Length: 145
Ligand code: DQA
Image 1 (cartoon, rainbow, N blue to C red):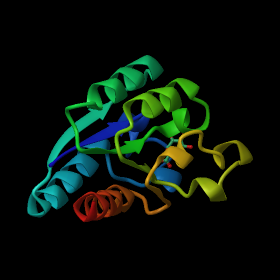
Image 2: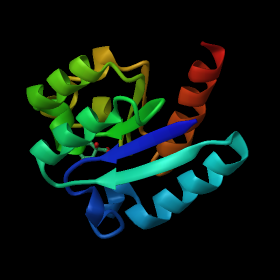
Image 3: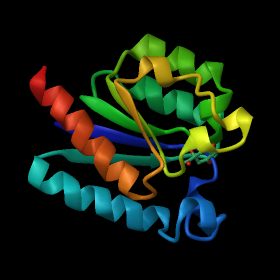
Image 4: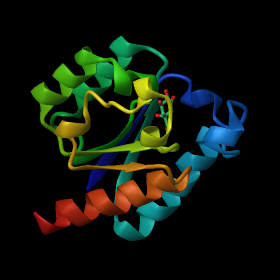
């Protein structure tokens, strides 16, 4: 199986960016964690990060026919991007939404996700571990289908 991991704006700064909220791991370290977890699950990982909404939309559109599922940390696009929502509606790839921080314990504007109802489920608040938990949850669902 092939799983795409899509990361939105500013996640390239993980490790330096508000470590008290997002932790000390860099995105490259998280990618390595996910690849290590994916190996025994027999999963190939396509890793992607962008700071641009349109590139995120393009990445979602490319999923069709290329990925069995996706893990999506859309970062700030989570709270605002109807373009991302529309792309996910169009492509209909099964995905798990994930966040490092617990978005429901943060400012009111972060407590709403415009993509959450399209996801299989959400993992939020476990730091870098959210990525691994989301991968395990997605694979459990895809293998049960
Ligand atoms: C985030 C939460 C978002 O509100 C924020 O804009 C991010 C990261 C998280 O992983 O906790 O950039 O998605």
